Image 1: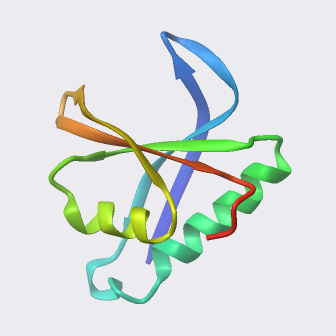
Image 2 (image 1 turned 120 degrees about the horizontal axis):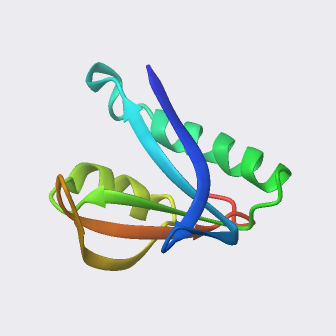
Length: 101
């Protein structure tokens, strides 16, 4: 019904200490609006804290307004837009993992 994963964040191919990159966030469309994305991301937040990360980032298509609204609603901060990716321009979000959403 819902899932995501995280890896070590990289900049120019080099690891960024304490920062995770979150990807693959998905919720089955028939379950949208039930708070599953929030629950999955909160559990991931807890797991990343346990493994020594203090921040997380994610990229989302700029035109995916539904997902962007969810991230903003649960406290992720928009860092920048226009990040060029093969699928199209992305918005980049970040959160401090110590903050409860």
